Length: 68
Image 1 (cartoon, rainbow, N blue to C red):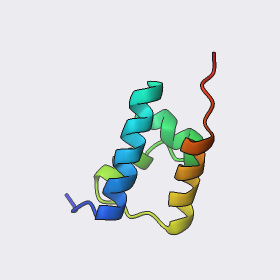
Image 2 (cartoon, rainbow, N blue to C red):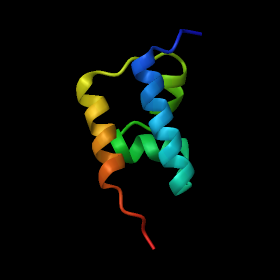
Image 3 (cartoon, rainbow, N blue to C red):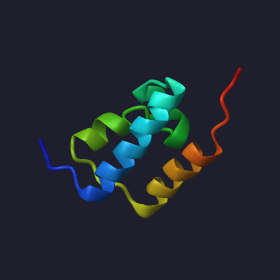
């Protein structure tokens, strides 16, 4: 297992807080945020994010509207 870099750990922490607030599954988050259902699992396995991907994640979290 690869070491998770600080930048990716920060993204994982932000995603975890978002998921706790919304109740969204890991795969659904990845699919909706960046079109990759395996995103979180791969980040947990050491995948590194490019700047553009980090920005997509931030934008998704910032603009997400809870559906009622």
